[in-house]
Image 1 (spheres, rainbow, N blue to C red):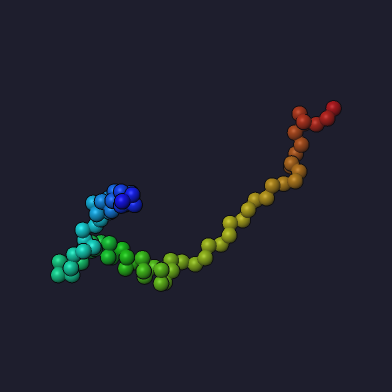
Image 2: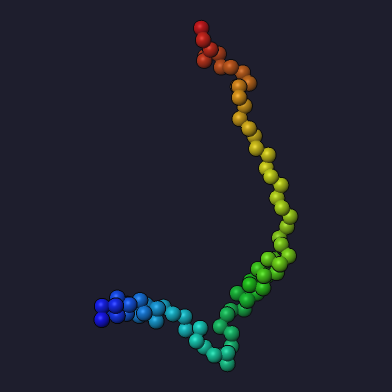
Length: 77
């Protein structure tokens, strides 16, 4: 009985929040909206053909080991 006591809230939430469209027969039509079907088709086509070439690596500016000009305030006296 203890196990049933822990699982019934989860089963109730699944029953409450479950999608009613999953159980509809095909006689009621496709529950997927037309714009979502169009988007999925475009995404599948883009995955097949690709969107473009490989991007070139961006050149990295490396830090200099010595400054271009020494700050006179930092020089030893």
